[in-house]
Amino acid sequence: MTKDMLEPVGLVRLEALHYYVHDLERSRRFYRERLDFAEVAVSGPELERSGQQRSALFQAGGVGILCSAPIGPGGRAARWLRVHPDGVGSVVFEVENIAHAFAVLESEIRQSVAAGAERRTFVHAGVVGWRGRAIVVPGRSRSGKTTLVAELVKAGASYLSDEFAVLDARGRVHPFAKPLSIRGPGGCDRHARSRRAEDLGGTCATRPLPVGLVVLAEHRPGATWRPERLTAGQAVLEMLAHTVPARLRPEASLRALARAVSRATVLKGERGEAGEVATVLLRSLEETESVAGPRTGGRRAR
Image (cartoon, rainbow, N blue to C red):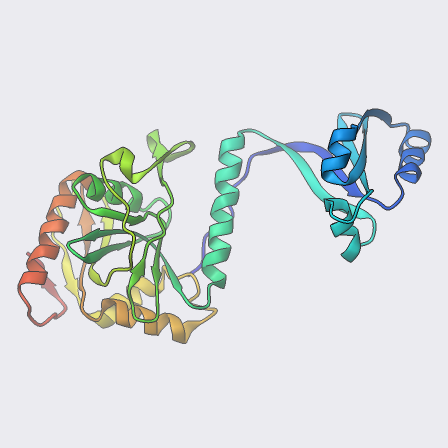
């Protein structure tokens, strides 16, 4: 119900530490005289005026120690030292691939937002809009949801998210339209590309939508899409496994999921290529919206 283990950022080595100190001269004596560090750089007048702090960089053995002391009340050093003693304010690492490292860190920030948003329920899912209704594709990382979402957008659906279905208390899905993260050959993260909906010939949704269709699709090469239709209760249990705050706020999560699927068709099955399934799903939503009828489990969907 929570995200899997943190993906490696690709750290190579510790490159530098940034200390905030009250007395820069004391730090200078310590690193130069006692530890035999070389002082290799100091801050200039323009940087000191804008940053309201004075800095010196010491280096030895390939590691840098940057020390900054406040010379005004508004700088970062002053803000740090108002609530902390002298100490490390930031750590600098060398990484194998900066774009990959930022992508991993951004994903972790989004995960923290998803876990802490008390007025929204975040479900790991891709989401598109079609004819005023949302199609929700729950799934863990590498389940193929982004690939399916991209094909749905190419087929004319509006884009809401490739990572989270953000549900409000009424069960509506709100846009969380980060760029789609399309992995490289063989699912390679290091060669992933960010694509906007506009790059795929689509548009982004701008308002929340009620859920019309939930698609629990597992990709298997060569499979034919012959899904089973689930009841609302079965759908809630399936989606609960992909709900970020399920353990933190179980009652609120269950309420949001139940309201989201209360008027939705829920299909589960194996799918083949995403492009072939996308048009079928859009047509399925149109058919279920035009023909009102009881939603029962255990039947094969047309």
